[in-house]
Length: 130
Image 1 (tube, rainbow, N blue to C red):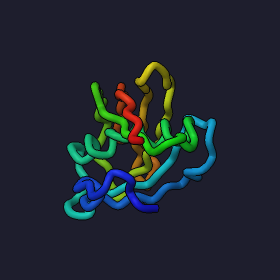
Image 2: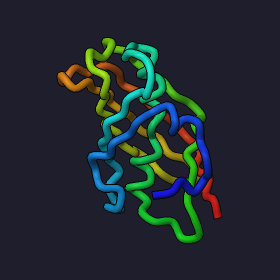
Image 3: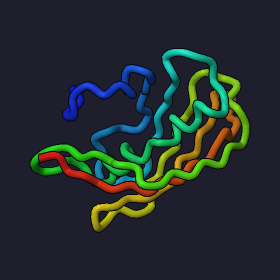
């Protein structure tokens, strides 16, 4: 589906494959595969993949009347475990809390061999685009 916010450079640098359905509101849990378009996987690339609370928030909220929303990161913490040994990384994302214009939750990042590579926690401001 077209991006309601126009061209975002980030989307040109990553390849994303949702596993969870995008149109299943009420569930604040989301799975997706992601990889960088260029470069080899390393610990630092996990920081890009860990900034990912939006899909879980969107799935929990469902369609928003009057437009789309953006998740603007206020704080991200990442605990690196090990570098991925595969290019694709599974993002296991949860929205623990959504309310009062904010959301918070973790993302566990796994490589294709099932190795836990990092755990990210994120707090974000929600901005609805009318």
